[in-house]
Amino acid sequence: MCIAVPAKVLKIEGKIAETELGGVIRRVSIEMVPEVKVGDYVMVHAGLAISIVNKEEAEVERELWEELMEVLQDATNGND
Image 1 (cartoon, rainbow, N blue to C red):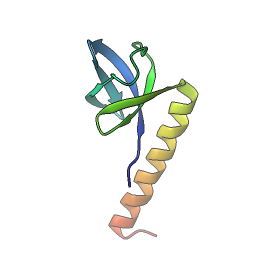
Image 2 (cartoon, rainbow, N blue to C red):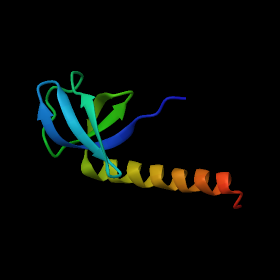
Image 3 (cartoon, rainbow, N blue to C red):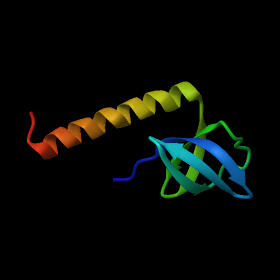
Image 4 (cartoon, helix red, strand yellow):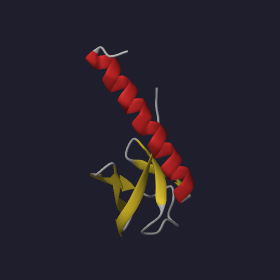
């Protein structure tokens, strides 16, 4: 299964953006979204920014992602 996650663009250098997701900084290609600007949110899949999303959508996606991680962590720890 492949998923894309929202990340905030912190810095752009050429065709590479520095992004942040949950405190983790990653460099991703922005070749598919050349109009992206610092401060925008992008959906990232396999090291590639594939679309620009608004802040509200990014926040909803992040909340869902955090909920999923909590459920998975509980399942791993044997909590029901």
